[in-house]
Length: 231
Image (cartoon, rainbow, N blue to C red; front, side, top):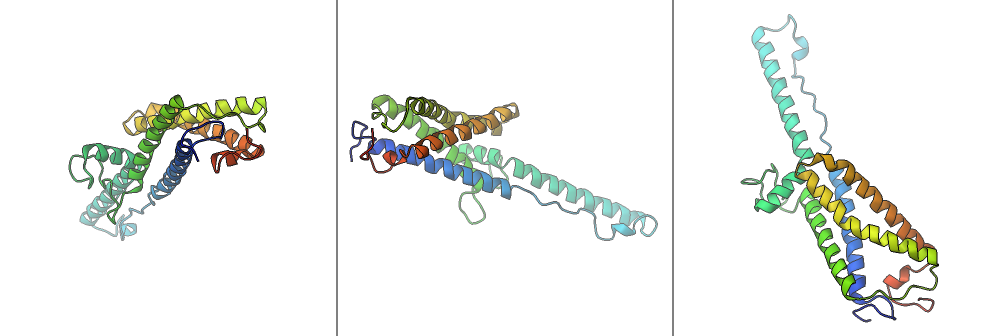
C-alpha cells in the first residue's frame, strides 16, 4: 500500500481522508437527528389543581393564587422551549468562552456537558461540524499536492463527468453546510433557507455519487486498492 495516489490507485492518505469524512458525516447526521428528538419539549398542563372550582366556589385570594401558579408554570415552559431551541447556540458560545459547565460567561443554561459529565449532543454537533470543516481543508490541500489515479475503465465518459461534478459539490458542501449552520446559531436566521438548500444539494450529490460507483462496481478502489478490472 502506497501513501500517495498513482497508477496503482488511491493511496493511504486519500483513503483515510475519504473514510474519515464519511464517518464524520454519518456521526453528524446521527447526532443531529437524535438532538432533534431530544429537543422536543413535552407539553405541560399549567392549569393548577382546583382551578376548575373557580367562578363562585373559590375566594378572590384563591383565584389570585391559581393565576400566579399558572403564570409561573407557563414562564417555566417558555424557558424550557427557549433553551431547547437555542441548545446549539449555547454550546457554541460556551465552547468559545471556555465555559464548559455553562455557569459563567457562556450563554448556555446547561453548558457543553450532559448530566453524566460527558459532552451533550449540541456540543457534539458543534465539534463535529468544526471537524468536518477541518477535514475538508485537509482534503483540498492534499488534492492540490497529489494527482488523482487514472479513471477506472468501467466508467463511461458520462460517468466520469457526473462523478467529477458530484465530487466538487460534495466537497463544497463540507464548507457550506457547517458555515451556514454556524451563521444560524450566531443569529443570522435569514440564512435558514440556504442551510436547508445546502443539505438538499449534499444529499442529491451523495445519491448521484453512490449510485454511479455502486452501479459500475468501482467502490472497491477506495477500500482495498486497484482490482483486476481497475483503471
